[in-house]
Length: 108
Image (cartoon, rainbow, N blue to C red; front, side):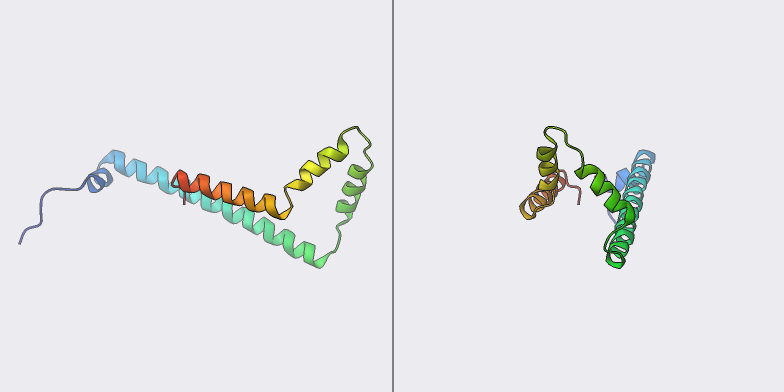
């Protein structure tokens, strides 16, 4: 038996030079995203190990003391806004919103 001579649109796109170029671009974008993600994950892992080994870094205390010594008007409010990102509800809300945006644009 002979196979049908018709090709689907997806198969024709992959065979055409434009389809191959598009596939290469998509592969490069995916590889770049994987490398960036892996680098961020590695940096986080290193920081997590260092944080577990040392209760405080010397530079961490220095920076914290310097920031806490600033007495500008509105500084307390600014620090409360910055701290808001770390509370339980806000982090989950950011996660859900990000997930919804990625899902809506088919970026799984």
